[in-house]
Image 1 (cartoon, helix red, strand yellow):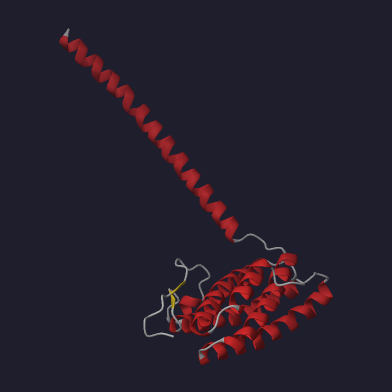
Image 2 (cartoon, one colour; image 1 turned 45 degrees about the vertical axis):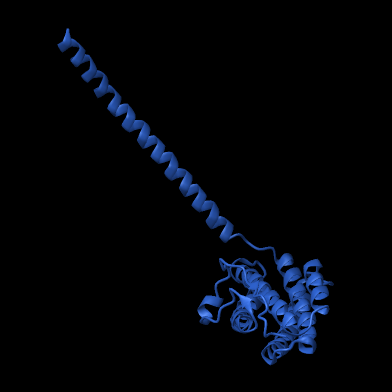
Length: 222
């Protein structure tokens, strides 16, 4: 009887092992398939074609906002470095705006007529600030704006349909990357935490893990 029970148990175990291995293989296959689909979805999202009309709207809006906010910074900033940066932004974005408008006139896409709610809120906030507070908030806004601009222009350069807009984005992207690098360096000097003063290669990456924050004033600061 004991021999029979042992034989029965051995038979049951032998039958269970292939079944368990089969189930484990199926589970691993499903997990791998799910991971592949997830990765594929992420790749499709990263390579998603941008709408030319949306690019024109956002790019023209960004140019207008940069010119307006930077002219304000030329007047109200305390730091000479911030004033010089603002002057450079007005100059470069005015040039960019003119180039974009020449393309838009031929393509038929409509540029923005207003700077948008988010930029309006920033303008309203900056008008009430002076000195170091102005410098910090202006530069923090510049970090965010140029991060978004890099993403927008990189996407258009890679996936845009209109060849003239695509060429414009490809030509302008290095300028935006340089602006982002300048903004990082100056923001760190005027007290924006997380801005850093690293090499330009770091500034060229659109996705930064940490959002910059305003450093608290020190007792000896004005």
